[in-house]
Image (cartoon, rainbow, N blue to C red; front, side):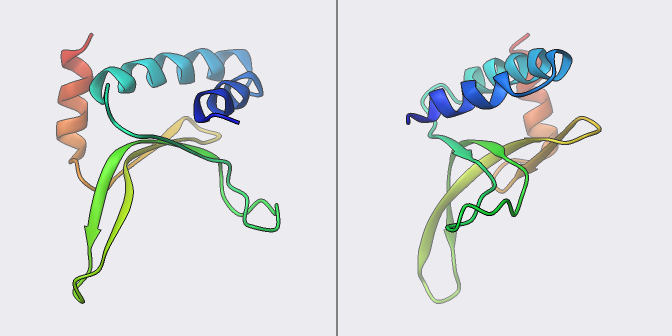
Length: 105
């Protein structure tokens, strides 16, 4: 299944109010990273057990370790919670994300 399809399926499982917010936020973030890598993590481990909340990742960030090794990882994560949304960023400050979101209105 393609990532866009997984995200769309995930959105359809959400209550109407959260779904519309998720879709609007998703579209807005895609405008920030139009060519960025898109990720979807369903929150399940290799055995299919739920170990985390599903989340959507945007962009690509290379983590550089002290031993010289590198690993590609998500630049910005959007994860819905019971109370709203959680954002995690490894390469952008929250101020930068907020400014970019406001510029794209």
